[in-house]
Amino acid sequence: MILNSNTPRLWMAAAGVLMAGAQALGQADTLEMDVTFVGSRQMEVRDAVKLSSWPTARQLSAEKPQLSYELLSKRLQFVPTMTPVEATRLRVDPSLSRLYRGYVRGAVGTRGTTLLDASYTDLRSRDGSWGTALHHAATNSPSSLMTGRLNDNSLDAWASRFIGKEKVSMNASAGRGQVLLYGFDSLAVDTAFTQVDAPSVVWSRAHVQANFKSHHKDSTAFNHSANVSLGWLGSDRDARERSVRVEAMGTQFFGAWKGQLDLDVQLDRYGLDTSATSNQAVVAFEPSVSTRRGALSARAGLGVAIDADQPTRDGLGEAFHLYPRAEVSVNLLRNLFVPYASIGGGLQANNFHSLTQENPFYAPTTLTTTSTINAQPVDFQGFRSTNKRLALEGGIRGTITTVFRFHGFFSTAQYEDFVLFRPTFEGDTASFASFNAVYDTVGVRTVGGEAAFDLGSAWSFTGGLKLHRYTLPSEDRAWNLPNTTWNASATYRLIEGLSLTANASYVGERYSVTRSANYGDTTPLDQGDYELRLPGFLDLNLTGNYTYNDRLGGWLTFANIANAKYATWGGFPVQGFQVLGGVHYAF
Image 1: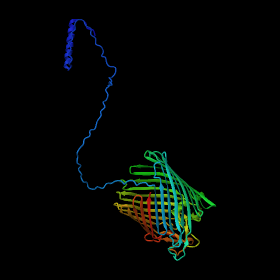
Image 2 (image 1 turned 120 degrees about the vertical axis):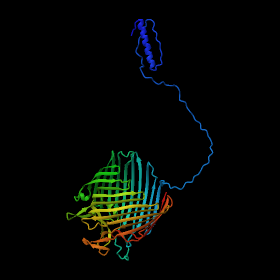
Image 3 (image 1 turned 45 degrees about the horizontal axis):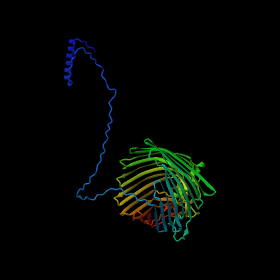
């Protein structure tokens, strides 16, 4: 803007400037300025000059000082004051027991009883471990008429090692046992009879097993386990068996759900002589899912089994089986009460190994059995698989404080081709030579319970009761199976390292078969046989255990204190009163 050189106008402009300055001063501006215009003057107002960027911090060259401290020792004079405190009981977890390389456990007793167990290992390191074990047991025949020795001997060896995330375990065992077929109703026979050597059967066995199992830090990752086993079993009566079994399992988490797949394959080849052999196979697999939501746990799946035993391949049975499965449990009040229920079933292959484990006096002379189909007798060749179906279980278990534990349960199931044992006979005498297997469809219902109670640190009590009911369409009885069983045990710790344990077991009445009406309580059956009632029996035992230290200890057992004359299997009485004492040492 350009101003002219007119003097009055200049004075008026000067006056305006002074008035503006006065107004600014009224606004608390401390800048004072007097302006005098002389002559002609040209004034310009230019645009303000602004910075093109924000200000930046300047790097200072000063260095951070390093401080050092020096401790000055000073002696203080003080007098400690002791305040007595009353004795207080502390709850401290006991230290883990020391791992020893091995142990020896031996015992001797009346009636020619000897026991020996020995084991040696390499202390089980994280990388791997190995070990061996020896077992021996022998005793005299319980019969006063038929003499001989029962014995069992075995040698085991195992090894395991971690390979990456996989644990590989190997196990091998070999054994030999002699079973006396002393079966005879000696309770009713004149003991003045001349003693004879009891017939026997010697079983030889070998077993090799390999196990592979993954160990991942993340438990939700895919984990698996596989077990492969080979077995061989033979007797001096030309019985022989070869078995292969593969068991595998895989698990994977999908969020809150756990998926699992189980596989079980069993192949058997067996026979009673070198001229005839039979084969059987059972294949089962089961996919399932499970989850846990708070106190609720649930699992559901579908079992599928294919039966290829000899009778099924001969067209005398069903080959394909389905088993819907479901399990549920609820944890109430932190394990105070845990009700549970399940439904399912399964297929079990039977062979020489499984039947001799159930009944040591099983020594068949034939594998041909007869069953009734459509009111007609039909002969079956070879072992038959047991089909467990319509299996329902339920109950409630719990823990009240830390001293009382209980479990009540019931179950019901139907077994097709359930294995029962009937005695065979030598000629027409009443002598029980051995047992043979018979098959029937058996319905089994069971109700029972068990409990454990600790009274302080000195007393411990346990007990259990089972009630059974059987239904059979063909056989007259569920041979050798009891309707009632119960057991009870009490342990008292006298001093540290010394304890006494008393236990009692009761088995209710059972039924077997005999060829004569002169032995016991009998009822006539078809084909000249008699039903033999086996009364219930009570077995009482007392054992004292003493532990001198972590390495050395011993025990003394008084078995069958009441010297009860009873038979667990029809015609095969057990030993009477017996004393057994032994020691164990760890090294």
